Length: 291
Figure 1 (cartoon, helix red, strand yellow):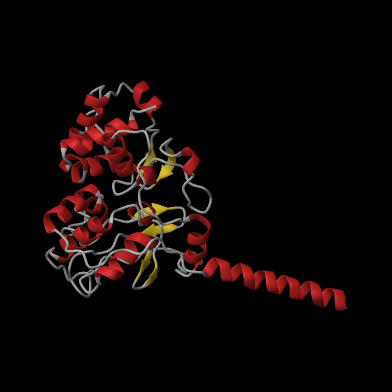
Figure 2 (cartoon, rainbow, N blue to C red):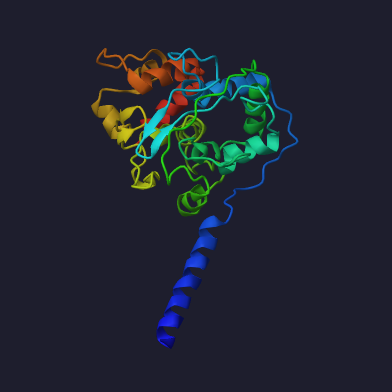
């Protein structure tokens, strides 16, 4: 009897310890929050970060950034929320500190954010970029209509469970340039892993929805929006891409074989990459085509 009691106690202690570990806050380096945001730079970041493609359901008749179409995943359908400056339906009541916490640590005023929102990528952004993006979003026209609710079944609708997910899979930090590489290459790598979050769609995930970083950019058999192809240097070269044709595809949607990139990638091109500067398009192409 005593042995069984001690065994039960040991299991309880291990369970409590594990629970404590999985529930501890996950946070990266503190952000500088007294920076003045630049709205023009922030408007560009809205396009660079894919905010329009996700948070504007044009087919559903939604206004700019007032809520996106549902993203279907194995865990349910996540609806990108209204991120206009409306204080009730949008994020107009958020402080810069709250916005930075959401972008950097996956923690919103309502609790833990689902990783369908790519804070794993946005955490790499600089403090100034966070301030600029916040300023631009606060300057948007307020839309008082909230987005639809997520359709996520139990137990995935328990936001506290995301604390465990973050402790297992999330390491918030800022981008570190790769030594020995050019500024253009590092800018492209930053875009792919940071705000443009190419890696979020073009990388396979495990059973719990975490990215397999060892297979970054090798394609995903069933990402949101459908299959996302391999975009490593070897795969792109095999598909006939060089720097000029890859830049052109990101601008116009036309491939080297004169096909048209449609589906989710078509939306990304229309709402995001076609608005980028030539320098950023060249940087991303340079990085992706480097072996």
